[in-house]
Length: 323
Ligand code: NAP
Ligand code: G4F
Image (cartoon, rainbow, N blue to C red; front, side, top):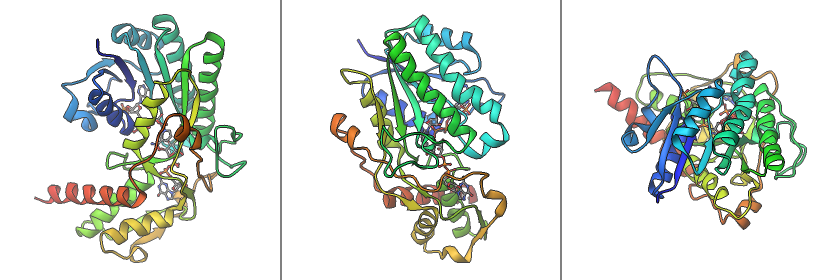
């Protein structure tokens, strides 16, 4: 019989890649979506007839229990969250409700409705924040620098706590930044590749940016969802860092994207003080040796391939809009 997986956040970047991956593995895929006056199914439109969508919200425990009862999942992937760091300063309480307490609600729903399901929590390298050691591993202490990072620390520890308290198979994947052409337009990689495409096609001339000196360890979302699945296929539950081990500045990302389109970034980029964050995470770089050793996980897509793919996808999308 086919295994059954429930994905919260299936309409997001990672949810769409994970749904594709699990369908390829022969799973019956269930996705939880929240009610909206317009739907947000763009990222899953190509697989919408292959997945079963169930209505639920991280704010509403009753809907979570009902979703789990209907899906009867073998595996639950909790990818839903308020995931944009700047919004966590303007909506800190909502971010805590979705990204922190939402994890407790889902774990409680799973514990009562399907306690033998395996659980994946989408933890984040933002938890390392003001880094206490470099590179960051599973044992590096957390020092979050945003309400989002603080909320993710709660989600991480409540997952560990439910594993230890109730003997659940619950894992936390500490994923470093990962991108793709499906990345939301407000995140730095996609903001840049979308602007490059618009500038190249004559639709814009300027790109307003914040801190170009911040460093991130950027990988590809398709590689990272494979790691989520691998975590739930092991003999025992555990936590893993997923990262490429290479760190680059935002300026290098900008240069790479403009170069790919044959543009000079200095002709277009303007620093906007409004985009500087109240507290910055200056430099992240992960050490994924544990995942490489125990999960046999390796990233396949390089940084340059990924940025090229994103610029090309945005160029094609904007060109289609011109005709
Ligand atoms: P994303 O594109 O922003 O997707 C977030 C998803 O959560 C969307 O499907 C959204 O639904 C859903 N959602 C938000 N609030 C909800 C609520 N109250 N109830 C139900 N669903 C809700 O994020 P992503 O990049 O795919 O990231 C997936 C997860 O990994 C997130 O938890 C994120 O914090 C974490 N993470 C991401 C990265 C990264 O670099 N991408 C790194 C580490 C950790 P709508 O479509 O309705 O808005
Ligand atoms: O792309 P970002 O917005 O991602 P950030 O803040 O690192 O968070 C992402 O990765 C986390 C994993 O570490 C996830 F947990 C989280 O959900 C999200 O997916 O910004 C990256 C860097 C920051 O240092 C920011 O200050 O880019 C810098 N930046 C400079 N100018 C900018 C901009 N970021 C954005 N979004 N927009 C700018 O104009």
